[in-house]
Image 1 (cartoon, rainbow, N blue to C red):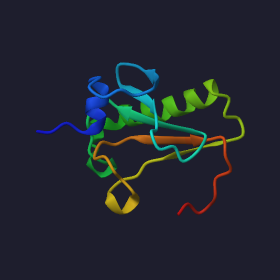
Image 2 (spheres, one colour):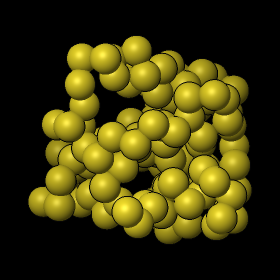
Image 3 (cartoon, one colour):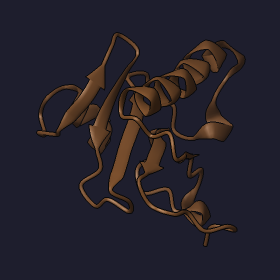
Image 4 (cartoon, one colour):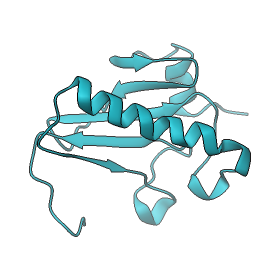
Length: 113
């Protein structure tokens, strides 16, 4: 089976600017940022999309949100930040490996487009 882009980054087959890493996830800078801060919080376990997550994945999914909050504090994002999960092609998912986008340092519009 072919590895996803994120699996290849986790395996260090493709370079990425790593902001944080632990045993459950890696956080990298997005190559095509949509905000001055645009990080991708990627679990090391492959879960194709949010709808494919199982009950056993709940601690991992919670950890990803905790990492987003921890990094927001570390990066002094006190003016606000947005966390986005794109699930499925109609939502803008480009890699079938769940990940969170942490966006900050610019005014965010609502509703998002």
